Length: 426
Image (tube, rainbow, N blue to C red):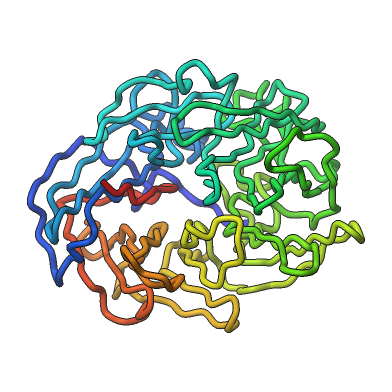
């Protein structure tokens, strides 16, 4: 049981107060000329908080941050509040040459300009029925983005398939009881992996005025489902899962020759049981769940037991066997730390220490154009420096992960701890 209290309005969790545009940013080292695009990320940045004691980190107004790289120079940094009338604060992705800010469980995506200004809420040309998700997974074979969406009023969750043309192509409804919070999913070549874990909608919390009325519910049996990726939902095969919560998956794939499905997840011991204002009930760790459809069983193996979150892979391997994974280390009370690289075949992990007072936000892998090796590319991360109260964007060589940075882009402001982002190449 966690007894840690966390203030999500202090330190680098605290919001920044201004929108900033800064051009021709100073760089230490040499930016790879092949990096042409934007490193965008998003997180909560409330303009005002009526009751700080009741503020939930997940409910703050969204602010998107971006750095544009172009031919070896850092052309600009911008931060903008996400408008549109709803809270959208969890992820930024690119689809069909367009930029979208995402959230889950109600509000639609918000389209942004290339400069990160708000265009408007978006229902993908009238094709989205209901809420969307903060986490989509793109099938390399089709370009389709798969996600699981939920809402407190539904007796089901929805498998939503978004085409590379930013239009919803298909939606399948999967019945579930108790209105669970389903933050993420995973895909393989043939399967959608659905998480139905014991964090569910609480009418009692909603009645008490909670802005995020989801609570740990030990009466809700934890399970993981396999549904068809390419066809109607039909009968989902459910597997009994550990009693825990999963916000994020690293990846999933079908184990060659066995029929088993491997899912790598970050496992939290539970969620919203004692700390009701943010995601901390003890340190989360990296774990492998192996689902055996023939036996109906789920086996658990710990891959790395140190505290960590925000797992990412080379997304060209989404749904396929992967060797490497990246993440950000987490200490007690969501204390950020170094970036991590896992070799899941070699069974080793290494950390990149950014220096005294410097800690990593979510790392993003960017493949080198023309590179064949899974880790031939760069890992990019926003890094907060407590000694200056400012942030940088740091570019690492993924094959020399613990070595010195390739380049560091110095920002004029700090970027608060937040959630997710993407490299959006031109």
